[in-house]
Image (cartoon, rainbow, N blue to C red):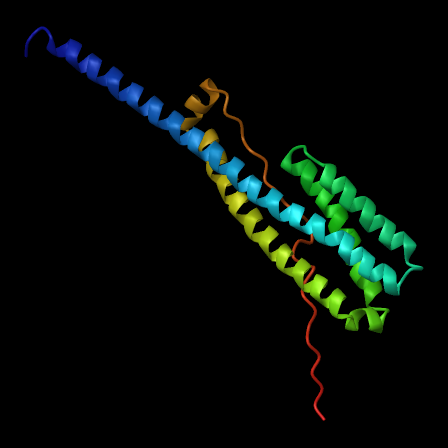
Length: 191
């Protein structure tokens, strides 16, 4: 063992630590980008739903014009949710109000057999149910990415790198009563 061996060992350790720091930083960047990308998937599906709601309200209005309060509540909830650009938690709160309004709208539609038989209304209801399924899939994908980055931000030793470079935990996107807007069932009677 020569006089340079301890120096080479120290240089090797420093290089290993530097490589680990760089790798951990890059992993955190990748996870943050995946969260942002998956959030855009949720945003796309929410916009799709926002675009369907005016047509649904118009279809119901044609049959149930005196249900003005419910129609107004859905319209206002849509506008509020569409304008929400804050954190996932703020967006989820606005979405909860919208989902509640849509539940009321569908409850009102049960009182109007002609509306429920309307081809336009059934098509819109099916399209909305499909959109809800897509929102739920996007939400699950986003929340899985949030879980991954939050784990890296919290566990040792990657939490030291996350703290050094200012990485924060991300918020989950949880909507209460999600998936309740199901497609209408088919009623088959035997003769």
